[in-house]
Image 1 (cartoon, rainbow, N blue to C red):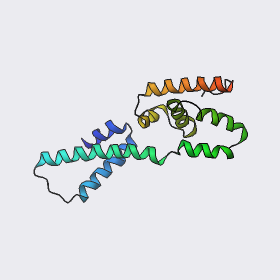
Image 2: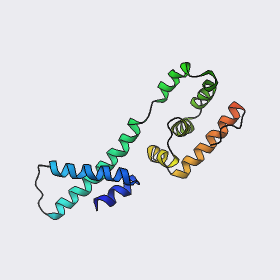
Image 3: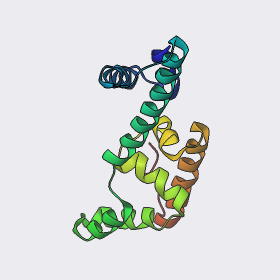
Image 4: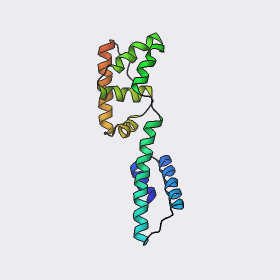
Length: 145
């Protein structure tokens, strides 16, 4: 049951196993008493869901650099990349975030959808529109990937 809950929330077996182990570690360290089997089951369900949510939040925090820091570092970026970076940072927020996460941080569309709490197809649309906007600004076709 716990493994199914974790897999449903995390959509990946490696993350599921990590959270699954953490839930049982919390169970081993739990000092309270359960009134009956149903109470224990409810505790497992609630702890599993919360652990999955915490895990999803931590993925975003640990693997990113803020866009403001990136803008400050633009001065030390190679001159030929500076123009592209400035164009990306000038995009509207929803396009800037998806382009940045995909091309600079290396996330897939599915991962970006989880991070931004949107649908995967929406991420594909935002990437496509963002690339089109960059093509117009930069006047080229070299952005397809």
